[in-house]
Image (cartoon, rainbow, N blue to C red):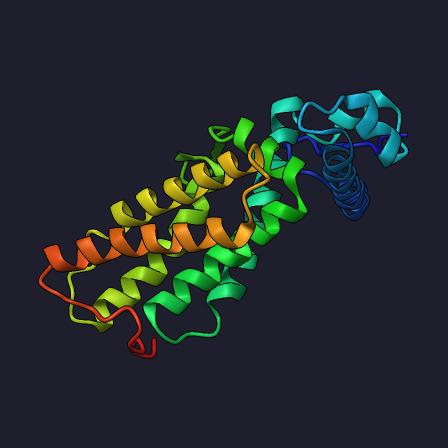
Length: 228
């Protein structure tokens, strides 16, 4: 049964309500995990009944823990974006040259796509799902991820003596390029991943190199970058 949510007379939640919070969080996480597994198994057009079956809850209970289907879709999209972000950070963790960082990030991104094609298709279908942060601003899951990369690029640009102001526009272009290419590759799987990764690495470097040159910097793509 759904845990009760009693309130005190002034509207504040009392101890009878808050003691159920761990239970609600655990159930919500279980449904989210079930949704991810169901998408992996059945594809991006998964049915609520299929999610409920894996979560081992009645179908009507799925949206008791999410404010409707869009909220669940957004939670899954954010989960997927965070997983891709984690893999890309692994790819960039070795440091080294600009080309090494780009190649490592793209390799990890495409590897994740290769391992989870249905989740990536789901993310593509919900690319503009919006969420409100605490400030009330609305952002999609990919934009949140782009912010993480933008912060990293800003640090490198500052270390190289460049104005970091163009970093956000550059990263939005890079994320769009990589995302569109990965989505295209999913529908053309005969092309080897290594070929797609090599082409993307070259294309992303061209974008970064052009941006650097406009700011007056000619950077050797194979030279070690400054420590940040």
